[in-house]
Length: 563
View: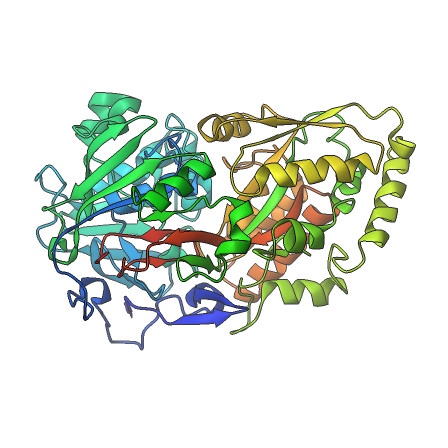
């Protein structure tokens, strides 16, 4: 049996800090016959000049979350909350290395099909009850269960043997087991070079069976039932105001947790968040008023961090006229991406010339999927430096679709929430598409309403975006498979589905990436989605707060904060 390292090297790719394993094929592999374990996450040293007194910290990363049930959440703000309350088998340290979480170590069989995770001694839930490997078995089967309707189920579990049967209702077919209380075994349907990254995702966190089954979908709404296994535990939730967590004394690494309490202040209004920051009510805000950015950019409190993410426009392909690929392509080509990124967003993002952006690895070590796409296709999908040429193509395509100069084209509606540059982008699209003779109305909804409405497909066009969960292009391309619970535009193409399945199931890395390139090309020619920018995270944080970090996957880690 091949032993597997707990800590993986991190690399810099196109300005993004990434864990290297998905792109290099060294997915945790150590030298044969050895086992390496590093407890980087267990380091209890405190930085010089910082206080060791427990800290009460207040932060703003969003408004009321739609859900903080790990299996049901798809939003990054909710996932940030979940990752403070729960711990997955593996997790990340401040250098974005994969490190041990609930699992102290793991082994991978020589054929790459069986992962055996060895849990730590004495693990507990936040209520003091014993935590065992059966908790992972239950939680992963619950996620696969069609009755749960977990949006991430196919994305995360389709590599596990028996998933298709489980997704059809036979949840016990999912090949996960617990031969004893400390051992969790996962059998894959085929080798997966990024499986160690999959198990770090918030949706893969365990939940407590007796509480979930007793309370149903209400279990995650109160401190009494939101039993967790991570660094913090919920102590209060006042909807529309805040969710407060306290140190979980039953967490295996509780001695390292420096917080007394962490209050997530629930605000959607950027100006209210900024006011709370200036008065000291909160020490960090994610939603900075865009009009303040020019004055804040040189401040030590302003942070602009790289993020592995693409922001895009989603077409509801089940509704006319967006079931016409020529209409979708016309609308997509009529967008000036350089203007959005560098003028409207003031350089806080990069214009998107493809769907999969910079920083995502390809087959060869150190390679870029985006760069290979550019070579394969003889250029980019959008002429970022020649918008006029793209606009001419857009007008020609709209004419071919039967709407010359927009004649006969129905009025359309674009749905978004009002955060960051979202409203400004909507207004720009309204203006850009008027150049085609198309009238667009803007519908702005609250964040808590926006995500379920989008998932239900109750829109014509809407704002979309994806932050990568792991360094493999499949993570974003799989969004547009017919079976994906995150396929909000209901795009369906049999050839794309076939290529994505082949990419997932092949044991040949070169073939894996070749299939993904072919799938992306079809999707872009089909205008399944309209990429706008490669986005970053910008935020304010008081300079006296130390020991926190931001991940390129869009997470903030506050549990070890000091002052």
